[in-house]
Length: 71
Image (cartoon, rainbow, N blue to C red):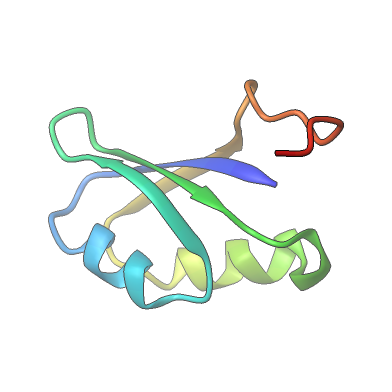
C-alpha cells in the first residue's frame, strides 16, 4: 500500500529511513514523504510507530496507488 506522510520536522525523513518501510520520495520543502508498506504488517502498527516520531503530522492513503497494476 502507498501512503503519504505529512511532517513538520527536519528529523522525520531520517527516522522514516530507519523504519521497516520503503521510503520512495521526500519533499523537504512541502514537508511530506511517500512510502510503501506491506499490508500484512498492518496499518495500525505503522500508525503506532509513526505517532512515536516527534514531528509526525498525519498519514493518508495515496490516491494514485492501484493494486491491480502489477509492474
